[in-house]
Length: 294
Image 1: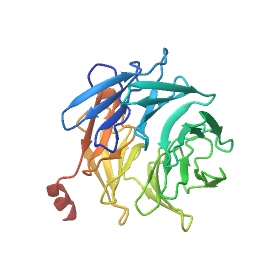
Image 2: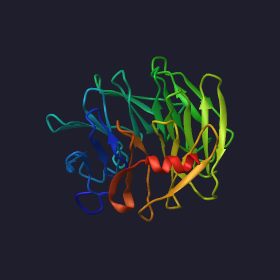
Image 3: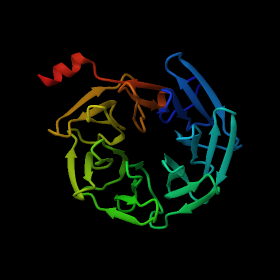
């Protein structure tokens, strides 16, 4: 990062192949990174106090939406004009999903924000949520880390909520949408990854090989492999969903602190490492793939 104590949470790709980086530290900035040139520009949010920026997510119209966990605001940044708008709310803002219909969904307490009317809609059945994703039909999926550890969905038109109880649910954290429509999630305290099939409404559970792995960041590679980071061990792991086999790889920095993974157009998995003040990517070389196949 261009300065100390930026605490970069993630690196989220946009349609142009560049990345937006939320800074959870005291800098009150987001960063825009171009990997082709190495250039990184920073933009300060208007909020005067600690914003604690948890997400910076591109929307279909090119705007960047920012979740300010510290100030309970959503922020909208226009890269073309450099202009900001902020929208305060009663519920803490955590992780953002930009919906194809133009609305912005955020966890903390699950809410939908309509940029046209500048109004929030709270989902009262989900007063606390953590992970979030949107499937091809526009259904909003979420996880609840505290309380009952469930996986759930919201119909974006009717706002009807449906909840599902996983076989293990000790702090269900990040979730990701697989190309086949299944929902993958990390169970932090149980050292497991899970798969939910919305068609059959069934779960499949995978135990990770090492105790206290504490899976946090979660990503799905272009080959369908499931990647996770360990919060207490300096490793990243790869789960083969067909066989259940897990391979772990050392992280080059101690205390990786990774929060989430995002895949770019070239198949590279991007991350932020807050304690190390870095963003980066990883991938498997052909040599590694061949070794694993043997």
